[in-house]
Length: 53
Image: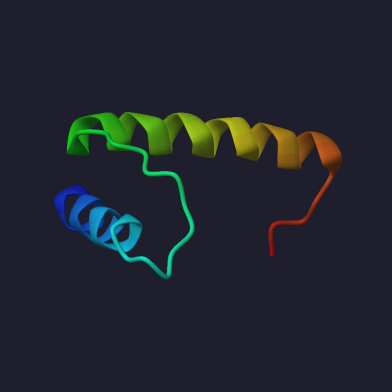
């Protein structure tokens, strides 16, 4: 799954219509980054009392 996501993100950041700073990570690095970001934002959302659904 992460290999497909990695390939899709590289393709998107190479598209001139996409205005994004590329985040160049290995598939394993991207897996770690996504896990840490998910944890970070879940904590913030819970503290704010936002209903995720």
